[in-house]
Image (tube, rainbow, N blue to C red; front, side):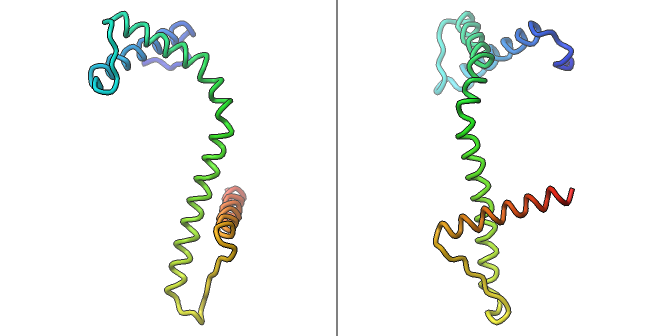
Length: 131
């Protein structure tokens, strides 16, 4: 298929609509127990066109409105990953000789969250500086 930048806007919209119509047909055909659409080919065309228009006009608005939720989810995922990293490190240190090394994280859940955030931030800064 040609590079999308070389296609005109009407051509891209038409291709997008055709793909959405095909997607609606595929969902109706192969996911009929979940996605039921009646009305024949005109129903596929109408719903495919509506999806295309919704993607053009509504999706950008929803993207802006949900940005805080996306940022929250991203930060939460980063904290969880770093928390697992800290937990694994903590577990490994527990198997080491106590005279050699000990690791405690105090402050309950908030202590763990703070350690995970600082560890993640520190590693991100090191990664940026090492590029």
